[in-house]
Image (cartoon, rainbow, N blue to C red; front, side, top):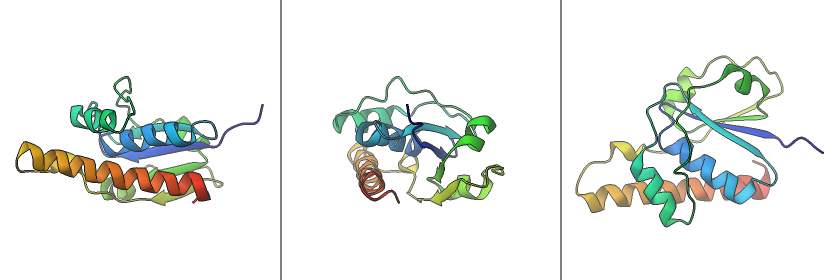
Length: 141
């Protein structure tokens, strides 16, 4: 059986954006990619991220919030950071064959306003991540 390329999504807390990306890539390209996500820290799974993904038809409620695993990091084929902080503070990757990209998205967990405005921010970021994942699955970049 051919080894699937490993995609490792990284964020600061592995609570929201990296979880959304993880969920979409598993749903849209899980047959072609091994998908993992982690954070510089583990902040727990954001309940609004779970809700916004449920509304998109994807259940991430069983995901865990994990800290970057150096072993996974160094066997990844793609390391994709989703926030500037993770991009700037990503541990050194010793695998010379890794493809590292930064796909920056606003942090919906920092959204303020009414419940509807916060939900709208989560949905906007979710949809932007979905579109970027769909492009990756379609083009490989």
